[in-house]
Length: 406
Image: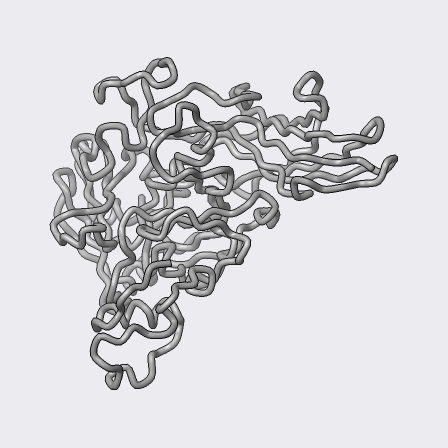
């Protein structure tokens, strides 16, 4: 990785936050010196990630899991994907962190400290599934621009915080409110303070759902810096880009939020099906909302070898944005026939659901196990890549793993 200089006070503060300890004798550090911890950046140690994670980009940081790493029912930090649009914020002061509620449709602007949020409002914990809108982009042809995610930009952690709807009700909003937009402390790659790397949002109806949180805890601990410390918005079931990290402002809008990456082709797909490679006008693109039905085989690892006559137990997760999974199936003959897998109820709405099945094979040889989920509206995962779109969003084709029977 390229070297980074953290010799500024704000940079050293960020390094201390990432390391979780104070930098002793920092005032004695020679001018222009780069700390050893950052001379050759080890993102796995820096972000406390498993070394089997895959780094796609370091400016900004983007990292994904492999399917077998996501076998936990609740995704731990070490296997959680990173999707950033800008640089990590520097010099975070948790004690003095503020959340501002503003915008055309707020009754009157209001500011809350983290202490206000934690003491004034009831706290809730939900397991919420977050998936990058571009998860699976690497399969699109013609290729789509952006990080070439395979299957690992998804997670389902437990988030603790206060309901956004309770804070919005406390601040008050007008009848003309139609959208909320977020603003955060991450820095544009240019370091131009007038530019935001990303400022997206959701319709007010999504913001008022019980599960939409202003979260300050992930899996029972303070949210790691790379995942949004000290405060982030969490909108389960929608593209993870709607779950703004390092949150300092919520704007209540009387129109669709027009922040950075709300326009053009960003997190939008053609409103009507288009041919691969076709140019689509901005006005013909629709904002991605609820994510499509999808599933992932997390055990065994692709490439597993088993003895003839033995069975293998598969398991994994399935999710469907705002909907539930009603049926789970698997195939060992390339989708010619399908058998049922057991599917569990979600821990709560917008959490993924676990499935399992015991699979047998007729003879020695190479096999593929395909998984297919069906949601509560009857939508099934496609067996092959779904319709092409310019940014490679919403690939929910069946996940496949390889098995060799010897």
